[in-house]
Length: 107
Image 1 (tube, helix red, strand yellow):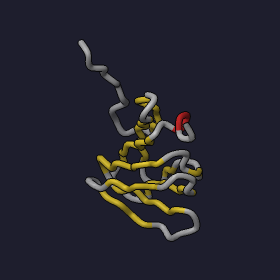
Image 2 (cartoon, one colour; image 1 turned 90 degrees about the horizontal axis):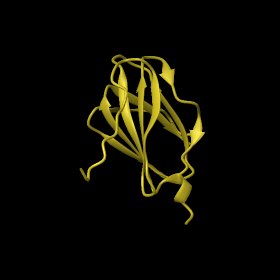
Image 3 (cartoon, helix red, strand yellow; image 1 turned 135 degrees about the horizontal axis):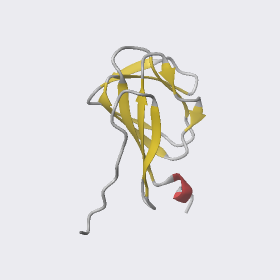
């Protein structure tokens, strides 16, 4: 077998897990219920938020909150302040794709 299989959590409980941590990419998987959020933080690479279920509420830097839906991908530039939450039903599930991997960003 030459392929590599990565496992991720399936369900509705709050989850923030690193799924892939290769040299070229870092992929995290997040599940948030209504009124749950990630800690306020700055992007440490080029970030792509890939929504696979629900609605993602996002404010960047000091900007206004916007809501994005299933089927959308949001690109967040490096060193951008991110406020990510789920303010609505149903459960929000998304992937955070960071490229390059933050540990190699300045190489």
